Image (cartoon, rainbow over all chains, first blue to last red; front, side):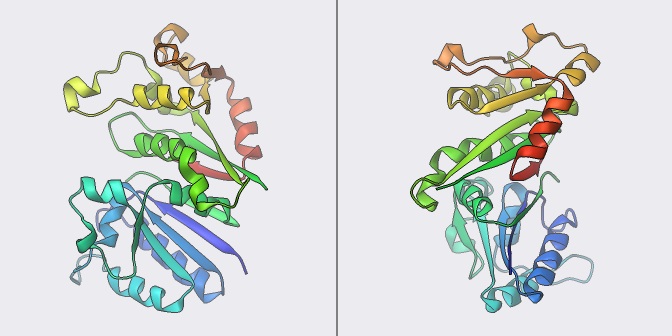
Length: 120
Length: 137
């Protein structure tokens, strides 16, 4: 089975790109692949804990937490991008890592496929 | 021991969104990626500016003065200082009436030796076909 690395820059709720990235992660993990999801720029918002579910907005915290339990999925937020937006370590969802951008490049190094979703 | 080549393709306008800045900062992050890799493994980025993305390469950007942030010009110069390959699409600068003299072609003022290259799109396409992973911004 392969490894998929997905990088996303798009914001939570403001666009559906993160929803797509999470759905793709679910599908890949279900097929037996491992997935690294890298959150940079506005996408770091997905790493914030305490997201509430409303029917008018995407709610990705639950599927992310389910993905963490598979052991085949890791999600990492860009530390600088998060700090710049006021999301500190203590605000981070349990299971989500925080590293600098070189972590993403290293993940790309060992990935069989990379899907990079830039911009909003 | 292996080298993986990553192609960062920058298509968006500077300052309108964060995309081109993030592409540049991620490419520059290749300088410290070794901490996560096995000995001898490397990541080699190539940065290509196409479409409206060539406007990121204009000289004399005043981002610090107007927005209080570092300019894309500084990031491009840092890339050249670090010897990253920087390609600018020839057809797109012609389409926008931009002369080479208006573009950031080197980082001599900060001690860089590598120069940016203006190349036809066909060459950028070859680069996109040759990299291990393509990262479009």
